Image (spheres, rainbow, N blue to C red):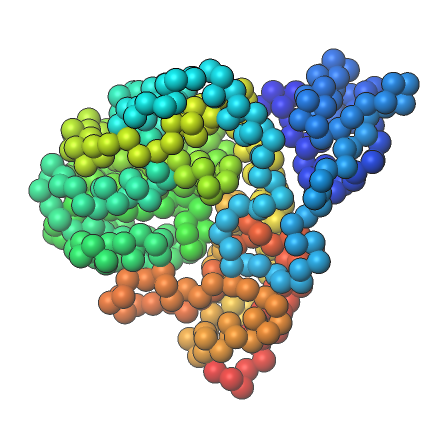
Length: 447
């Protein structure tokens, strides 16, 4: 990340989190250059861009000040609800102004092209931009292999229904796993089988046995920042999954929906180890920008392109949104926002780990260490009445999600847990929220 981008991200973060409040005078250009370890020209450039975004204003001979924004301040600032349940991005850091600028620029740039039906694969300019964008996270793809979809959900739906070259029918899923996809597979009557995944990972010998004998069409996995566990497979496990897929002619659907919350330079996705053309890579843009964007990308092996094209036979994603996203990425705005979100969530996850270390010192709840992403699993004693626990937490204004829905309906080997999300929990709420959870679990007498 360039020094200029780092300075811009840091100042925007300080404004959005209230460290620099409306009317607050920013450090002088010279002081900021020392504070951020950069040149004076870099600070001037950053301040000018913040002025263009209407986040700050200048007074000659006085300095730069934070703008009083209409409706500024945290969303629901007086709401005492501690929200460990929501998976949506933090409303307070949505890049409204940046993306509005990109929408306006997209209209000026593409004009009449936005009113055509467009290409089934998606806007060509965006797909070309994504070649370099994905390469930064060790996903190397040709433009022809990239499809723009209405979020990752659309790609998952198509893959579940379409035939695969291996002629197999059963979808293998991690248990627990992504609840919405599990419900879709069951609703569509797709043959599906579960394999246990815990905070420690997955049994590779059992995975190989299923690949060898289970008639597996594809294995659906979230290797990084798993929902609901929050954990990430080791490099060795990701490498072995790719190798097993080629050996047994089983495809892997890699849902890397939170790729932007990690450091791509130190992470190789499963697709980076794919030597046989058996890995489908999925990426979402909703988790880093805002849910309403509903855009995702699917990178497909050569053998799957014709049949995927046939099942996605019409243009069903907004060309305007695609064009705006293309501009958002090209202008460096995506990269800057990604670093802002990553820093924000990493700080909250660190506070969550500190709170658990303090309030769970006796080890009543089993916890896996998670440093990035937004999810963490609190594994409860089997004696806990989960429904009663959630009701008691709700009375104390703490919201969490039961682990029950993250399993297939007929899957028997279930763990009892809460899924904790930090995406909407304010930093000052995290420790008190964990204290309440631990108090209710430890109280007893209501199991």
